[in-house]
Image (cartoon, rainbow, N blue to C red; front, top):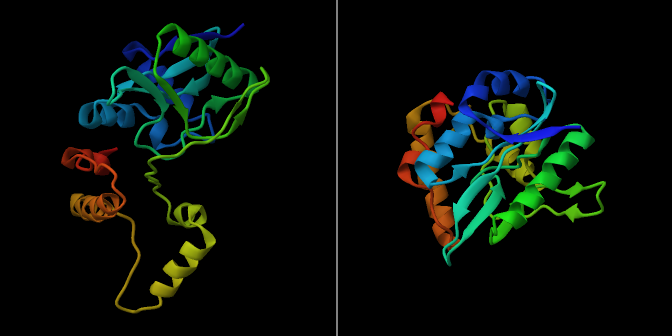
Length: 204
């Protein structure tokens, strides 16, 4: 029987080593990302870990946010791209069931997942996206994530010899990204990221 626990600092090394064994793991599953959300966006990390004995066999990153109208919500994961649960079907189902029980027991006002999941327990969780920030260190992976028409427009624009495509690696790059995203989000009536959000990104 699997045992579910919330992440503890003393599990940090074991957690980091376990992430390397999951093919779906990304920057959004890491502790530096959770710490960034807490420091800049007041998101309280609630990462759940499924243990089989002493071995980590499943991970579900969650974040607790305060609602504007009062109460709290659980989100997997706020201000992030797709953050799927890690593990086999048994581990994922155990983590989801624990989350739903925890959600009811703690009287959270809202529970949000950003992926589609069909559970063996009979319930289905549909992807719901209100904020998407896709970060990847690989250009080819990033291009594959783009919609076909967006990828086509990008390739057409790169035919202009005055334009070039490179990976962002300097703080200046993230400040430019911040400015562009702020303009787009204001036009959509959405909240912008705080200035301090982008500063630590080059180090994560």
